[in-house]
Length: 484
Image (cartoon, rainbow, N blue to C red):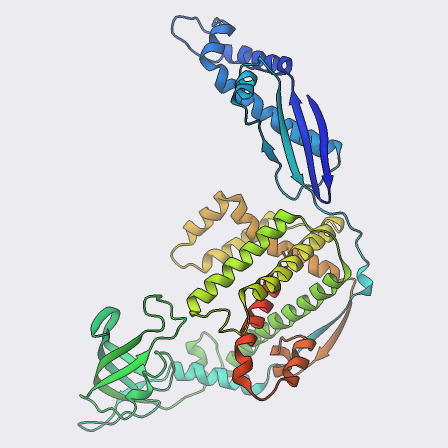
């Protein structure tokens, strides 16, 4: 074979490969000779089928395999001989001339084709010691633990029917109701219910539903008018105005809120103090998660500022397409337009293009750091993460497990964040990390210093700024979701 490089422009490479007819003939004959001992053809004894007969019967299919193997071998040779790191699988372009291809398939003529590649950029890793980040931590306030315990007690409190022939419902009461919902006078799926418990003031129903039932009496039928939220789970109901005929069958008052060791035992704890400790630990894990996320964002910001290099065009285009598709899905679900958010599609595209560049750049940097630091994710760690993923789909665990195990690309999506977190820990082991104790409000304020300064400088005319903030919020989420 003959390989000639025809393009070296930035991260793009192109080669022309020529496979001589004599090489094709040699490979084809060799494959047919091996096939002779394997096939069974009527009229011939095993192993005695003439090669020429095999060629007439199987020649084209065998040559297709020969060509595929030669292409794969050539690709490997190009990569090895030129010490290339590929961003994508090579793109192969065969000649458009059908006669040329037919001649090659019969080993009567040479076959020339092109191999187009995109390679990963080369860059020098910067020392981690120059990275300075702050790890914020916060103590869990006793009041937050007490509030959580109170909510748990409230969820487990008993209710009893109010006395009297027609008791009046108050906020905090539980109603037992039947209802029939309609939109434009037509009943809709999921809009009818019987013996449904409604806790007034809990906020668990559509906004406005519970408030219109305060003051209702047992046996009364009320018309409740509400509008489904724009982001409601059922797309056919989102943003729709609906009317519910609600019949109150019972008005129940909450029992005493009891917080003691018996409550704790209901949650598997021996004492109230043990329950408080468990709740504090749970909240503490949430705090730690926020702290870790902010620390990681600082680190990625610092890394992003350290590196500037050309990005593989196709990799960048794919990343932008993934982000933009999510943006469009979000806007479609919310019913918003770019104008509603104080921007234009052109401006939004430019903003998300920068985010795509950041994610691709950081992904390449973290991959290089991980390779240099010999960071590895074990199969056991992937399996543990896959178990956690499967648990998110109760009753479908086996289906989820099988899906990932049978799809290498999907499994890679499980491995990637594990690798990224390990690389981040590897960097933090050398970087300068300063611990800082802050309040809960400070910890959960995940705006950057620039965003905080901008917020402080904004005018009091909040409505004019509300829409652009949502765009910035979505952009920040896209930035933080992943490095690559």
